[in-house]
Image 1 (cartoon, helix red, strand yellow):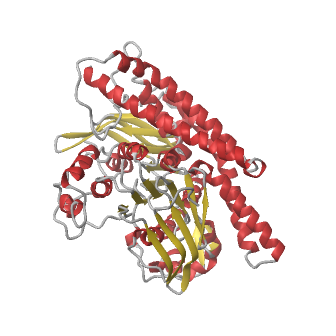
Image 2 (cartoon, helix red, strand yellow):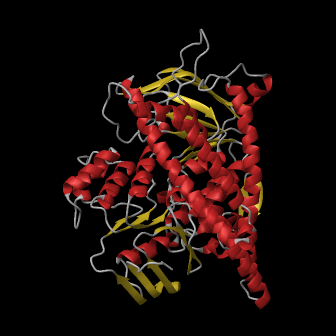
Image 3 (tube, rainbow, N blue to C red):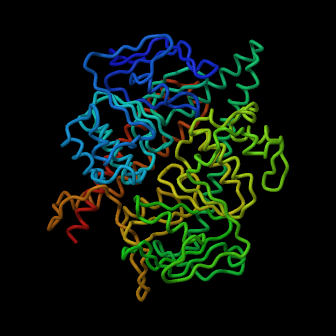
Length: 600
């Protein structure tokens, strides 16, 4: 419960949805400076709870109390721009903040509000909606998946804004890095019950495991019918965490192998392949280039992708990530250069195809052609058991797809596509609308997949947990390849361009400048403080990252919460403080790096 008088409260709320109760006896108190992560499985009612909080939905019973004059702004998961001629019309509709405030935020986010709403991209609509929500600095922000459709530069800008924000916010997000940097308390919505814990998101996993384990013990003592389900939940979540720790260790080994093959940092061209590498070759691109309308998308880019590689592709919106995917997989032909693919290459792609799932069909129709059995990569399995692997209850086999949330439809799409036999898996923004447990599951399935995986994503934590190599695009046609995930790419960019060996061939895949949402004005020279920070901050950032990793390793101890709750909470607060310091250091480094680039 909040320690200061609440600005908004729900008391003893009851809400029926369909044939059953979604909430019964639910209460929530929001303080003036609360920074809350709202966590729960897809379909648990997180978005519905936000609608109750902002007054867009009336409960069947219970009371909503709001401090007089409280200004609430809601960022919905899917901004509805239908019926508006332009993004400006959308951003200024209804009870909107002053136009100049909206325009100022939009300018910082790099979105043109004069764009036609009907043809704007998902990222452009999202930035316009953010400008509308943040302008005028409301007292309470309700944010439903705010990072969806944002690139990493946009996410970094939003993080920095929220760190300076003086009001309260509640955020639903699948982005672990975003939640860890910003939140101070967790709201856990689980089976109709809302729990609150005064810890940042960094401590959520250990806390939730302890809660489930205690519930399972209590259920066994009472011989409850829920005992088996709770036991499965507690063991399943904990076991998945432990298995993923082993998979992360294996991922580090694969990254070390790739680092040795890449050779000099920042150079994408591979060393001469051994016979073993040649036999494992899946895709080989040599000096490929592509332009659209005179604008370079990819310039002189080379890479060799082997069987079992997990490749992440990152970059600002519009930088050519999807175009690079299509070049590598055969959907596009390069203007120059060559792409060779294994003759046995058979690929499947998973993007945001939820709309292709007919809402009138049953799950068994989509997964098992109306039957009870599904063929999973050549092996026959009962559909109910296979659904359980993807966190669905057995009775979901006969459910109508129209009754599923967006996240549940995404999970069903994953189950259907992962059952197919293929040697190449293409994932285009796979994390949107997935809950945290499903992301763990997706990480696990990718790790166990014996083919090659290409992933376009803005989710930094997900990339760090899954990929062996990362390709960073900057929008100018240059691409940079590193062994590792987003953190390795960010560290490389902070360190600056590598020094080339004498006589080395110029390589367009060298380090790209850090993507920024807006650039500072050009300066003739750096001040002494700017120069000092430019030299000092990379080491400071590395020290902070190491301290955070050490503290989070201690938090991962499942027994710490029971042995020393006060120590657990102190350590959680320490991690939050370290992350805030790290974010400030990274923001300052981005500023002085851009100044240095402008000064030449």
